[in-house]
Length: 118
Image (cartoon, rainbow, N blue to C red):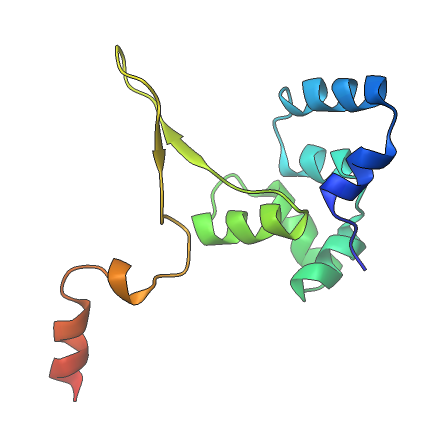
């Protein structure tokens, strides 16, 4: 069973927690993130219901769906946030991208296509 990041962090001494948090801000790859939460590819694969080789390929990709990245991050106990930054404006957190679409967030025209198919 996968361990939650909060549980792992809570068990660490405060000084170690601070070093981990500082290092996490510098991480650049999915592999680095996985290793920071002390999970193996096998453990992550079991959590996601895929094989280890799938995780290996995923960590080497430079392009993927936001929903795939969200599942990867959430399986480690994290939360994915997409932030748009513009000059001379505060950052904007973009919501609902890469998330499951609920009825109130269906794309425009989705209902019409479904009705036309009937």
